[in-house]
Figure 1: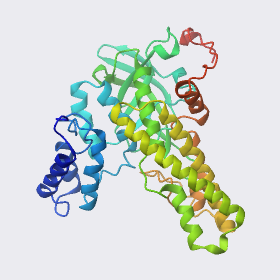
Figure 2: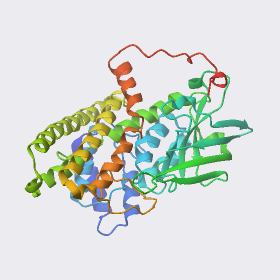
Figure 3: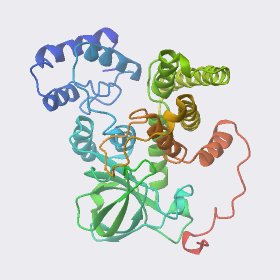
Figure 4: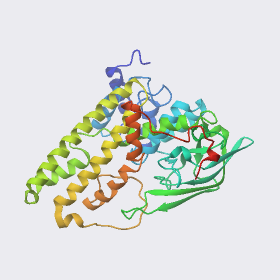
Length: 396
C-alpha cells in the first residue's frame, strides 16, 4: 500500500469517507468506526488495523481534511494512555488476535486504558517492582499494588508489568500483561492531589487471574516491552503537536496583551525568555515527530518530556506572579475524579498546582536526565551494584 499511497490518495480516501458518512448526519461512534475501517485512524499502521501502511507524515492530510469538515475526533485527552502507550505496544508485541481485539475499540474510544507500572517502592527505579505474577495452568495469578495510575477509575483495560521470576536480576524477571480492570480482585482507590481532585489512583491486585493469551511478548521480556511503552509515553506527553503560542505560554501571552496594567519590566523579560524557549520546544517536537517516520521513538523523547515539565512549571509560576493577588485565588477544591487531564484549563492557581506533577508523571526529571546523558549524549553510565544480583536478594 505504501508504494502507491501519497498525499493525493490519502486526501481522496478522506473525502470518500466524508461523502459516505457525513459528520452532520452520522453518529460520532459510527463515524469513528468508519474512519478506522477506512485506514484513516493511524495511516502508518497496517492495513486492517486502522492504517494504510503509509508514511506517518501523511496523517496531517487526514486531520486537516476532517477538521475542515468539522468531523468528530476520538477525544484524545480522555484516551491518551491508550493512544500514546497501549496502542504502539500492542502493535509492536501483540499477537494478530490481540491486535484485532484491542486496537479498534481503543482508537474509537469505546474502551479506556490505564497503565499499571509504578509501585510505592518502584517509581523511579521501576524495574525493582514487586507485584508478582505466578503461572497457574493457562492463567497468571497477580498480587500486588500499583500507584499513580491515571484514569484507573474509568479504565476497562490496563497495561501491566509484574515480576514472574524473582531469581534473576530485576530487569530480566518481568513480564507484560493486559489486565481487565473489571476482573475480581482489582480494587481502585482515589489519590487526592494538591489540586483537590483525584485523576490519579492506587490499584490493589489480589488474586487477579489473567489468561496467558493476554501476555504481550515472551515471558521474562517484559522490560523490553515496557521500554517501548515508556519511550512512546514521553513523546506523547512532551511532544504533542500544538500551534505557535499554544499551551500554557499562549494563556500567559493573552493575559499580557489584554491587561497592560499588570506589566513590569522584569515580568516582560521573563515572558520573552519563556516564549522563545516554548517556541524552540515546539519546533523541536515537530522535528521529533518527523524523525518518527523512520521508526519507533528513541531516548530523544525524554528530552522533550524534560522541557515540557520545566516550561510548564516556570510559565505557570510566571502567570501567578503576573496576576498578583488574583493569582493566589483558587476557584474550586471540590474532590472529583475527572475524565480528562487539562494542563491549561481552569484558573491560574490550578495550572500552577497541576504543573508540579509534570516533573514526576511519565518518568521523573532526574531519571530522564540520566537517560539523556547516557543514551543521547553517550556519557558514562552511573555505577550500579545490582546489575547481576537476583531481585529476591536486593536490599529493600
